[in-house]
Image (cartoon, rainbow, N blue to C red):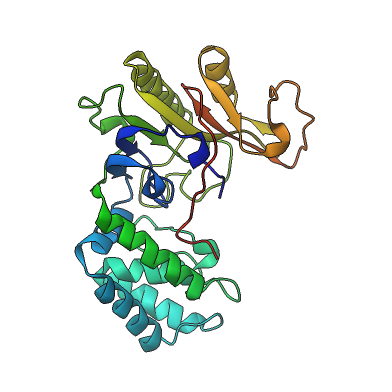
Length: 284
C-alpha cells in the first residue's frame, strides 16, 4: 500500500476518511477525532463490531469460525459454507474471516447484497502477521474517539468542519477495473458523474480553507483520467504528489511513461510534510 501518511498534515483536529475502504490510512493519523465513512454498510458494521466487542471476543470468534469450517489455503468448500452462513446471518465478524480467505482479500457483493468474492486458493489466509495487525488495529480503534458512518459522499455533512480539520478521499478509480466501479454489486457504481461531483466537493472544501488529500491515478494501462488532469491544471494551487519514487519532483507531462504502469498520485491543496510510516490491516 502506498506510504500516504508522510504526505498528511502533522496537526489535525477532525480527520474525515470519506471513502474509508480498508480504513488503514486514517487509523494511523494523529487527530483528536476520526470519522470514517463508506457507502458499503456491511464494512462499516464490521468496524463497529471491532469497537463494540472486546478483543478476546473478536479473536475467539475468528478462531472458532476457522475451526468450525476447517478454513485453510485449500479448503474451498469450507470457505463457501462460511460465505453462505454470512449471507444468511450477516454476522459482521464473519465478514472479516471471509475477507481473510477470499481472493486478493477483496470485498465484493452482488445485487442481493450477498458476499460473492471467490476463494483465495493457495494465496489468502488468516496468518500470524494478519492476526498481529488486527490486534494492533483494534487496540488503536479503542484508544481513540472514532465514528463510523455509511453515506454516499455527496450526502456527507461537512458543515461542522473548519481549517483545523482534514478530509481524505480514496474513491474508486475511474479508469481502473475495480469490482466496485460498475454499479452491479448491490451498491452505487462510480462513473464520470461521480468523479466530477467529488472534485466539485473538494473545490468547495478548498474554498473554506479545509485541507484535503485525494488518492487517484492519472494514467493506468494506457488510459488517461482526463477529468482529473483537467481539474489539476485548472487549479494551480493543488499539488500532485507522485507515489512512485521514480517520479519525484516531476511533472506528469515530462515523465517517461510505461504504457502498462499506473501513475498513482495523492493530490493535495497544501504542501505535504516529511515522512512517517504507515501500516495496513491486511499486510502479510
